[in-house]
Image (cartoon, rainbow, N blue to C red; front, side, top):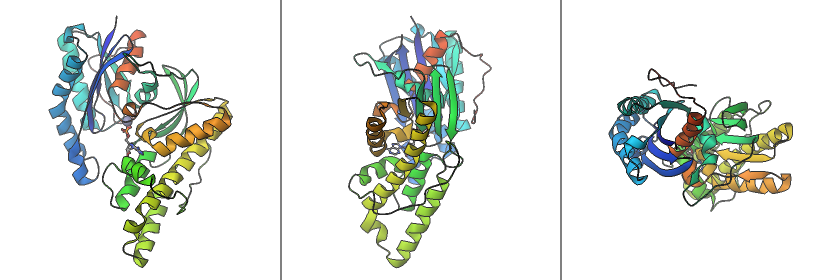
Length: 336
Ligand code: KG4
Ligand code: ZN
């Protein structure tokens, strides 16, 4: 029997989860509303909020799972990538807790966690698991990558963004039209009422399977600036169409390389993960494309798309079973 406590603190969500023999028993997440006021994550404030939240969040995860701390076999924690101050809180907590219980620690790469979230099962709910090898489009606030997942421990990145991440494109463009942070979910909601073909924005030109979103962001910014010069109420009068058109542009960019990657690798098991995989337009577009291309599409449950410790615990569980533990001298890494 293996019981893993997972801890996630890479950005602005403090989370703890318990996995017992591959089954998720609890997944507690404390969001940090303090950043909304500033329109983005303030690293210093994130570290402080993690310090405030980590003990109650872990206690709640253990209580909800109806286990005792002495039953825990190992502690899995996010080592990176992420904000260093945020990571330090989770890693330091994991060290103290592991040392006190005299149990091993397992370091987890946050991005692998997002991908392996597809293997999370709950007590009365077995989710469909992709078969190896599968293609995973990982789209979050900090990363955009195309990954061939060969098994639980074997990943090959075949494409990535050369500048902004897809989530950043959502968030930065949202800010331009005065939407609150994080902008992705707000754009998703407003886009449902808008016309996706109302406006056109620049599509990037990059080679291979790489992505670029900074050109789109600039094109959006200049477009808004020019239209406001003619009509100061332009944003208010066109908010839904702007959101739908922007979202459509991001989806088209993401989908283009996914189709290319599937053709190049001849892989038809297709998964998406990360915060942006919560986007309803992207989910629908991939399902629709999958019908044409004969893909088997895997969409994570919404609660496992944005940052959570369940994905860290399941990754830690697989690593623990493979004896991939680490020493107590481990340090976090902002960039892995
Ligand atoms: O995976 P995540 O929680 O954190 C990182 O590892 O970066 O992703 C957060 C990102 C943010 O940029 C947020 O705007 C975006 O995911 N996001 C969405 C949606 N929900 C979250 N973007 C578009 N549509 C959504 N529904
Ligand atoms: Zn993430």
